[in-house]
Image 1 (cartoon, helix red, strand yellow):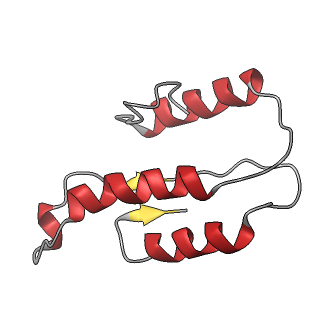
Image 2 (image 1 turned 90 degrees about the vertical axis):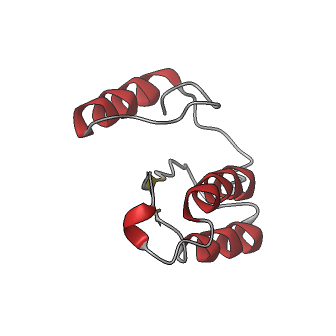
Amino acid sequence: MTGDYLDPYVESQEELLNCYEGTLGAIKIAGPVNYKAIVKHICDLAQLDFGTAADPSSIRNYYVLTILMAGLIDDIDDSVNEILRAAELPISV
């Protein structure tokens, strides 16, 4: 929601809410609805932070993925598999 695919990080809850409000005003919701690629991208970012960390306090970032949708998810099976992958990483979906 930052508008920058390569730098999706925010520093505060206020910045996150501002990005969310800006996104809602800037997007047009349409189909098809495919989420696998974006969920995979966030999982890959989190995996880089998490790695094989034996100590969870060494994790640098915690990711929050907010999914906006208007209807059915067209790639539901693939999306669910990636969301299940996120359950093992420092991510809230």
